[in-house]
Length: 114
Image 1 (cartoon, rainbow, N blue to C red):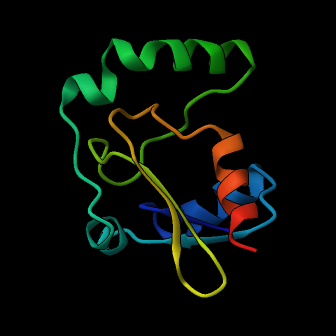
Image 2 (cartoon, helix red, strand yellow):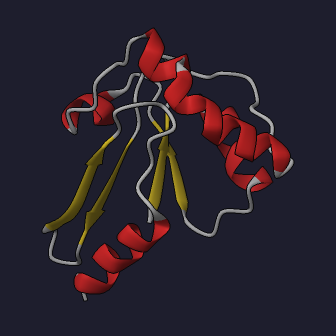
């Protein structure tokens, strides 16, 4: 598993350490990977509109706060799962900033790639 961030190396390292991630964290401030995977920039409603409010409220109630924005705030995220042979098992192109695939879908794609 790899996380790709738009932040500079020190910010990416700080975030991954704070989140205690057990996988590789890479930084891509120029967004080369985002473009290579065809991830698009969102509009204001996709980034800060009502579709994101529920996730934001749930996160705040769980004690999470958004830190400083790094990189392009309009960049929409994505999630991709490849198997050991490099075959794409899952591609999720977010339709809003808070549109993330369910963990179950990621785990199923990972299990299917063994």
